[in-house]
Image (cartoon, rainbow, N blue to C red; front, side, top):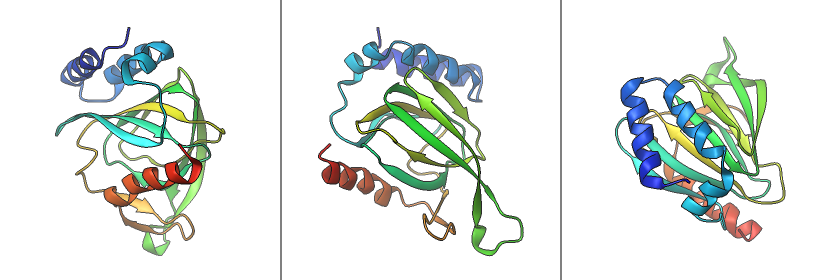
Length: 184
């Protein structure tokens, strides 16, 4: 059974035990191992959104629902993260800075597909972009080791791959707009 309040408390206890992602990854892995229970606890995904579950200075938990074929530009978090997919698929492209290039330009450096029941950690220095490559909604629990909404960080232009400050409001609107475009 997935109970939101219990999940929050388990994540908080994991952070208190170990301020890295390791203990939280185990909490998220246990949760997404039972995807039907997560859907029952959070509700059936019916539109693209970033749903706040918990937000504090040292821990943010969000329910990310990706619209079909949705992609978000490369970005970093400046904190560790754990992603647990409970329905659908989330493809991550990992990026690295190109030494000597002006503007913080990046290049692709790897990729990882996360499917239903997968839970994966991301280190605090990771730059990644995310795509939902399937024709239906993808739901994932994202847990961050800090305040996801106020921590200064970067995003990279999808066309030029040049660095700029991360714009939380723009990215929240992207989820709304993509949902309107796809009817989700």
